[in-house]
Image (cartoon, rainbow, N blue to C red; front, side, top):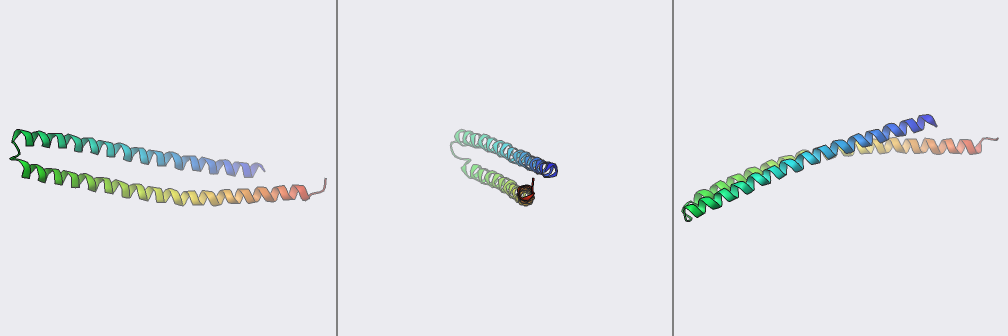
Length: 121
């Protein structure tokens, strides 16, 4: 019984580790995307000022700059989301292995209970 409990505790520790790691990954991506949005917002304000100061004469240049910057941000976010997908896939693999481990503990515990009830006093 102690061995089963020790194994279950180890499995729970593994789940906690995966959960903490995924929280770090998601938190990091959240911060990076927030920073990208702030950068893009600042650029949009700058381009609006540029348009206002040139009375629209700089519109073609501003449009080209905006398109390039937005495309750059979209590429960066897509790359981060791909990395997040890979991390989640890896975590899913570990989760399946831990589930199988807990299934084994559960079966062993049930067998132990059966053997204790079947044993004469």
